[in-house]
Image 1: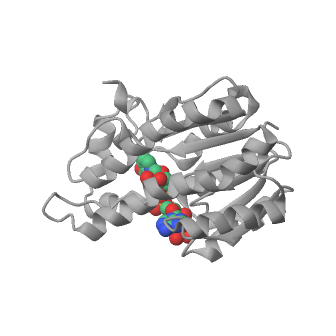
Image 2: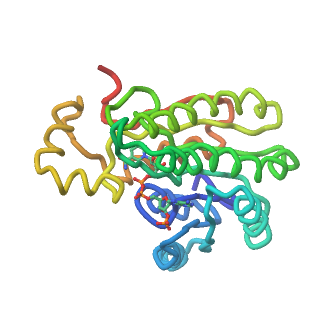
Length: 252
Ligand code: NAP
């Protein structure tokens, strides 16, 4: 077990990639705060599943785009599970739109969660991590944070911003025993891209043809090993790194 006794917050833990990370953290011995927002029944189901399998987990509700709720979440988790060791900034939204279709709200909603939310969650846990002189912050970015995609300028800006924020935070926090790194997923089969896959039958095939592995969409579980690595002490000398888990997409 790589995370035995560690207290971990995973935002966006109710579904998709975050739920897979929570389940894997549970198996690795972490005490997992499964954070949901609108789908609390799903967050509770993920926490129950971990407990049933012999792990420790509890569901929490927070709108991570709101700094006050980030602060409250960090406090509630520390009270319920103990001082926080690991934060996975995973919650995110992708609102596909052309330049003309991108309203101010669409821009703000993505920035408020994907970028501002990750910063204010980090701010909420850093004092406790500094006190412990131990902390692991893993930002879930995207291949859309290392390369551009059409009809996704706002989303790419959030993920590119999160990539460079990872490096900026690592420069500030490494000396306090806090590691900040990012995992950049490729195309992962989740609710996020279900409308694209459903509305366009050739979508998965086209993504597969653009991916060296020949797999159009990876599974959420394919990402969890990378997140466990950054969350564990195996990564104690790794700061400001990005690990792409993308089937080779970004290697062209
Ligand atoms: P998903 O299946 O759509 O799940 C999104 C998660 O974010 C849900 O748990 C949701 O919680 C949570 N969330 C949404 N708004 C929130 C808010 N305001 N406050 C707190 N939580 C909120 O997404 P996913 O595909 O697993 O994506 C997870 C992360 O991976 C995102 O950052 C995404 O950008 C990134 N990513 C995904 C892909 C992909 O292909 N899927 C590729 C690259 C990067 P509720 O349901 O409880 O509201």
